[in-house]
Amino acid sequence: MKKNEKQEKSLSSGALELSEQDVMAALREIHGYLDITSLDFKLVYRLAVRHAIERLRHFLKAGDIMTGDVVAVTRETTVLEVAELMEKRGISGVPVIDEGEKVVGVVSEKDLLHLLSSPETTTVMKIITEALRRGNFEVPPPRAKKAGDVMTSPAITVRQDTPVLEIKNLFSGKNINRAPVVNEDGNLVGIVTRDDIVRSSVLNLDHFEN
Amino acid sequence: MHKGTTMEYFKKMTGGAKCPPQVSISEIFWSWIGAFLGIGAVCYLHFNFATKADMILIVASFGASAVLIYGAPKVPLAQPRNLIGGHVLSALVGVTCFKLLGANPSFAGGVAVATAIALMHYTRTLHPPAGATSLIAVVGSEKIHSLGYLYAFMPVAAGAFIMLIVAVLVNNLANERRYPEYWI
Image (cartoon, rainbow over all chains, first blue to last red; front, side, top):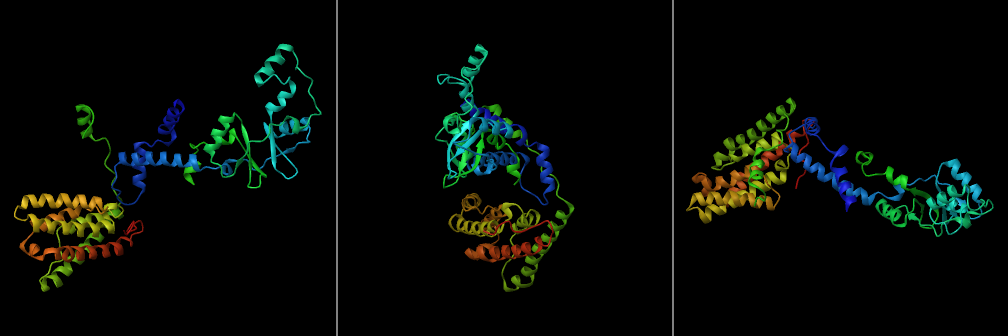
């Protein structure tokens, strides 16, 4: 409820709001007489923008905002290789695929961090707190472990035509930060992260100009 | 009914919006040309042909239609649906009111215009000059009265149609104009 009020406020103020001067300038640019006052024009505009935002919320799809250039690992990839790959690419998670390119899981920063603690240590902050308290990690990093051993599985995936709104709810509901995007055959075609969703925010004016 | 305090009621009367800007000189020019040719055509046909056949082609409300279709051709009120539909429906309403209530002209006039507005709203053919068309059917000359329902077709529909043809031909000569925005 509180969240909605916040959103409402950011829509009615700020970049999308028209000033009297904007409307008069626009009316002057249009040749011919439009039988509309600036107040009515603003009213129509505000209501129309609200509809457009509502439409975009529902009709912007995973395929529109996903990163298509996605790297994946297999179950057999060692955790060291996974960590190196993630470090090199500056990413915080990577899908795990089988021989048929089907997505079977996801390895995230969190999964790797869990390698450095006993299974009872559940949260990332707990791992860090424990490590700081001890002066070292609970367990020696098991370099030989494989992606298949640490990945979160089954992977929560989305389709290219999954609405962004649905993905948003999925992320907050399942408390995840990324979801591999798969086609009808379950093959990996991209990945959607929280970052992509933030960047695709409906207040991005590019969507209005197209 | 108005909901709110008395202050709010009076505050509504202060307005708040601004008058739209002045149009360009070319708009003024094309408004003049269109109106001159449109009304000119109707007048020419009226005085040279219609009157000789003891008929009428001019209704005073066409002057008001000219303001819209030649002066503000973008406006919904000025589109063909509104021009023809508004005039014809209002004329039918006016004639009906005169026939039924003509004995009490002040009542008939009020009912005619009010009903014309309501019907135009309902049919999405609102065209302000047509309000005058319905009123003329009630308060007009004996000659108008004697036409009966013919009034809706000649002069009203015929005259409006001539004005429409001129509007389509002339408005589209102007670079920045396009007419109509929609037909029906």
